[in-house]
Amino acid sequence: MKPFSRRALLRASGLAAAGAVAGCATDDSDGPTGTPNSGDIVAGPNGAYAYDPEEYTVSVGETVTWYFASPTHNVGCRPGDSPQISLPDGAESFASYDDGNVGQTVPQGETYEHTFETAGEYTYVCIPHSRQGMVGTVVVEE
Image (cartoon, rainbow, N blue to C red; front, side):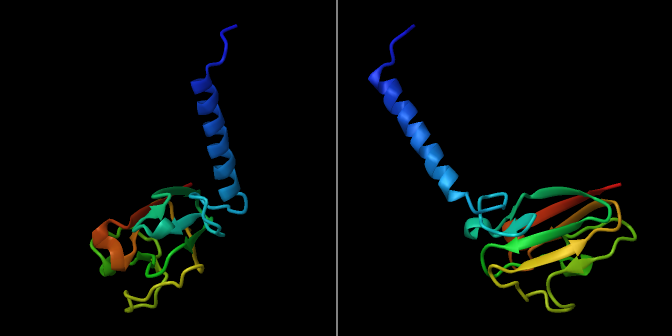
């Protein structure tokens, strides 16, 4: 058997330590990015203009919960509110803000949920950050 070099030993020790620290950082979280939350999709993980995951798949009748990890974000899937929004024919539109108040955001640490009753692909946005690319998709399967 080949002896372990000092460099290999240090590299292995460093990787083990990094793994242990990473494990500690996510022990009490249930979100996609390790952010403590109670949602399926994280809005604004680490202050980013993004949804994590960007695409999420569910079955008809399932409820999706968005967790707002940072402030100044919302979820909008009302076609008249942004040209990037789309939803299947006959599907119910949804938004975390009141009708006509596209600038209304959800406080950090809060959640928003929607139950999907129609199969298809839903493209939603954070209205304040849609130009920065904060766009997500929920795919609903039969």
